[in-house]
Length: 299
Image (cartoon, rainbow, N blue to C red; front, side, top):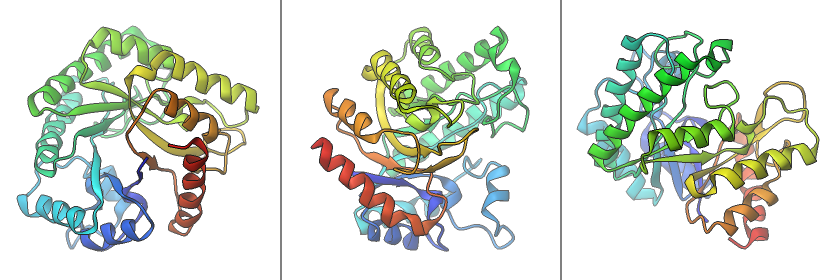
């Protein structure tokens, strides 16, 4: 099993320096986010750029894409997936249309970069613009929220078909799809084999203050329902305290021995993307921990 990382968690001034650093930490693949492209001279703050939706640019130059492709080849770090998250459940059809338009830009980029997958979230009714959908709104449970999100997903699958790529969604506590059962329902209703699951165990919980047996049961239920749809595995953890406080692998409630054991059983051959590393200084420990867990599972 190859180890990978999420590109915004290593910040460098150039794409070349980013891929060099990723390779230096022992990563063989990357889930790329376009916020990792160097900012323009007047855009130096990564967070503000992300809020403006630069992770899904309206346009992408061939020069920028070639820079990414060349760095990946130079350092032997393959592009496992590209981030394409937008608020698929936004109340306004006009906002959802912006997202699908930019998704097509990302899909074109994936073909150029020879990356096989776009990562998505299902979104929330909480209105923070087309690009964001990671905070809970009670309206997420209303039928209209489901219908709007499903319509977005069907359109996204048509884009995926057009560009011959896969889409991966996550179950997320703040999103319309916040349980394994809802994910299974979505797969059945959309009916596209282009759509798969990103198994991120830390996202399966509403809070981190659960006992180990509860955590295992939640992970087990998700595997039992959705193991045939898993297209990518994330290695993020959830701190053992009230609320949602994500942390690096091995420092929270996720039992990665169980996770990797189930991954082995289903014959998953993709990478493990280490995620949730809030300080680059933690990467060596995260890599060492996950390599040990993978070796224990004999993957």
